[in-house]
Length: 325
Image 1 (cartoon, rainbow, N blue to C red):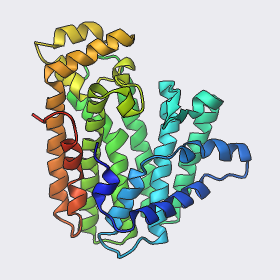
Image 2 (image 1 turned 180 degrees about the vertical axis):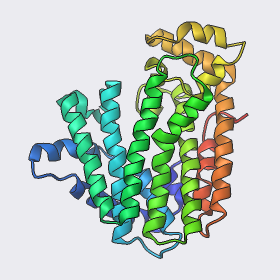
Image 3 (image 1 turned 90 degrees about the vertical axis):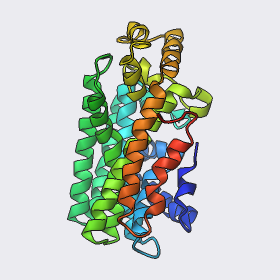
C-alpha cells in the first residue's frame, strides 16, 4: 500500500509530526498514574497519525511553517480518533489493536470506556483553546461519529443492508473525522472562507475513499499484510460495499446470502471472502471509491497548494491489487 504520509510530500513532515507526538503524549497525562497508563496505551503503540498530518497539510497551504496552534489542532483530532478506537474495541470485543493488547482486553470494558471518554474530553479541552468554531466542530464531529456507529450497529447481520445505508455510516464513522482534520487546519491557519469550505469537502471525499479502500482490503488481503484478522467485518456482521455489491448479483448473491446473516467460523469466512472476490464486487466498490477520489481532486483545485492533497484518494486506489470498474 502507498505510504500516505510520504505521498503528502510535506517539508519537515517528520519534525512536525514529532512535535505532534510530544504534544499528544503530554495531552494524555493525567493526575492519576493508572489513568495516564491506560489513556496513553494506544498513543505509545504508535500509528500512522494520518489525521494530524491532514491538519498540517491543509494549514501549510496558507502558512510557511507549522505553528503551535496547528500542532494542537492535530492533537485534538487524533485524540477524537483514539477515543473512538477505545469505544470501538469494546463494541467489537477486540483483543488486539495496533499490534498490542487492546485496552478492553487488558483492563476490562469499564476502564476502556472511561479512558475513551477521557480522551474525548481532552480533545474538547484542547479544541476550546483554538476558538469557539473549532470547539463546536469537534463536538459536532464526536456526535457524527456516534451516529455513524449507531447506523452500522442497526444493520449488523442484515443481508438487506443498502448501499445508501453503508455510505451514510462511513460518512459519519470515517469521512467526518477526515473532513474535520482538514477543516481544523484551514481554520487555525485562517484561510479565506471559500478555501476552508473547499478543504472541508476535500477531506470528506478523501475519507470516503479511505474507508472504502479499507473495506476492500479486508476482503482481498491477508492477515499478515493487514496486521489484523482479514474478513473481520463479515464475521462481525458488518457488510461493506464489496459485500453489498456481491449480494446484489445473481451470480453470487444466492451463495453469499446463504452464508451471511449470522456469525461465521473461519472456513465460512474464507468461503464468503472467496465468493466476494470472484463476483466483481471488489472492483465495483473500487469504482465507487474512484468517484469520490475525483471529487477530492475537484475540491483541491479550489485551493492553491492543495493539488497533492487532492490526489491522495487516487494514490490510495492505485495501490490496490484490483482494478476499479
